[in-house]
Image (cartoon, rainbow, N blue to C red):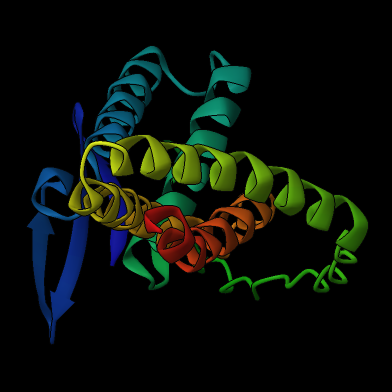
Length: 196
């Protein structure tokens, strides 16, 4: 494949045997930004060519450099070498696609130590609060009817279990989940004594 400027537009030329085929970059999967940059480069190259490349060597150098940059981007997008035909000098250069970068793997971070003291303290405080709340609710409802106390434990258990399941492996929330889970188990063990 060869990148050329034809008049005011960029074209990519491919060969099938001896037959040359020109393709508009818009028909290739290069992306709109790259395609627009190619056509802009071709327009600038056409303007510099009309003024005479010898009249402005700095502009000629810029056109050549930009053309090589765009050829490199096309090569990277297509994954194949691209020949660059300089529209001002007629010089042809081959631009290879950049090598695929090896993914740099960072060394794994050592696992953080488990904060047992802090975590168990949080679990204990949460256990005490939830156990007190659930047992108080059951005792209050048991004064009205025993089935209401059982129903309240069922509602609390069914309501909290999905949340506990979701946060059971989260670094901080797992300690809260452990406390709530233990409180629910203890609330069920205390329930028969509340009903007496």
